[in-house]
Image 1 (cartoon, helix red, strand yellow):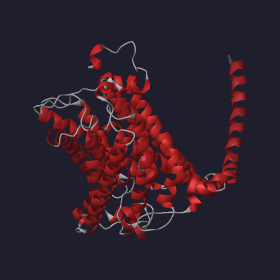
Image 2 (tube, rainbow, N blue to C red; image 1 turned 135 degrees about the horizontal axis):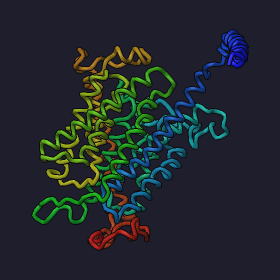
Image 3 (cartoon, rainbow, N blue to C red; image 1 turned 180 degrees about the horizontal axis):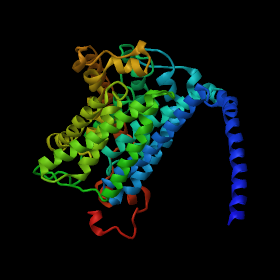
Image 4 (cartoon, one colour; image 1 turned 180 degrees about the vertical axis):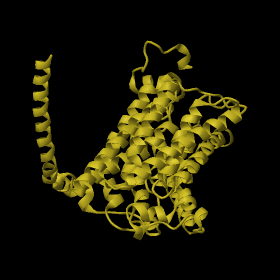
Length: 461
């Protein structure tokens, strides 16, 4: 045993000496690599913008799952096709003309630059910043287009939907976006919509409202006596999965709108999280109080309502304000869904108009209520910071600008979308026949069923 101890002790001594030598060398090695420890800022910005764009693209899957889960199984394949094609068609349209209309110049109402048509100089791969910017913006355009899919689900001609996706991505969304983000007249007035409560969500929702009015409710939704018939979705777990995917993707949507790898990303991520949680809780409690049971579909929409509501003010409000904004959005979405369904008789199967339109307007106005200049100065360019909101001593100035933006975008989008859908209705046709609607759009529009081994005869009634 003594010999073993001597042997081990000797080896241990040499091991300690070797480790000491390595430890003495480490500071020198750290000094040698300190200069390359961080990426150049422009590279970091591009990487962050691309990562955020990838997250927002994944939201397409979330929208597809939510819409499919909240509608009937006989239309699930149609919904998958629409969510695939609104991005595919929209990406080509935004590449060809939409990006130029949105960011091409500082015109008050419409941007334009031939250098950005077909992505201009980025075609040669010479401007990586421009390519990253386009990728991030095209997934936002696709989000605006896909909102309409859910509101007009189960009765819209597929060809009409493809036409609409092309037009909103090429013209409607870029013009409204230019007003606020591209150097247009609302941006010049310092309207603030950090990540798109109005630019993205309300644009899609107000277009959906016009479409729903023109296309009418689904067959059987309202009886001859005006009674409302519930048409339940076929897969609530699928809808819940979609909401979780959307929540995850929102961490690209809101924090990505910093457009750069800066410290403020963390604050935006926190306000986004708290508002979503507040929206879900408020919607759950509201339905529990009104219906005596906590409703899952409304609670899921409550989380989305909180996310939409915080999208505009996420960079300019405190964490406490974010919770309040989310709580109000969660209550609003429940009341709004009931108002559209029961009072206006507008059939929106997934509540898209309420989630994205009403709560998008609320989020935009919330900047003028809860916005704090001190937060803007802390994280962003102080030359373009907001005026303090009404609840922080800033008066009605910023709130008035925000309200003007909400009303202006609503008027522009609703009128243009109504004209667009009217033309589609008179040409390619907007609504499928009663027979095709009863059969389901999977069979009538695509010749296939989503669940061939599980669909029952009752699905075709």
